[in-house]
Length: 162
Image (cartoon, rainbow, N blue to C red; front, top):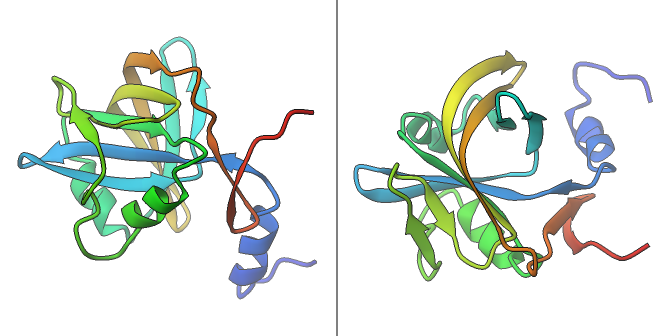
């Protein structure tokens, strides 16, 4: 397939052939939890400890969340398909019925996830119609019994042993 400027649907399908984990990025803003879902999460650096995810430039949630002093990255568990859809909803109470807790910095962590990373925004890099958010790690909490949710070809799935 040749890439044309109008090929966004074809590119979305092509990019979807790469499986990715799914994270919730959440923080307290004016005392209320604000969060979004990203399937573009990437560990970046050990020294300094950095991770990244991509957010659409037009994201109203990221425009609010980026000012939070602390950000919680929760790696969603394989049972979180519905939770993921709820946190991605354009309107309504995204946190209704979701169990969460806030850390001292205001980072918000979701329960029953595979990993919690307490972070702060380190930098943003322009990347076309998205921004790459670089987050500096402050805290790591593992939950090894929880298997991560996987996103592939527009659907949620589970890891399978090889």
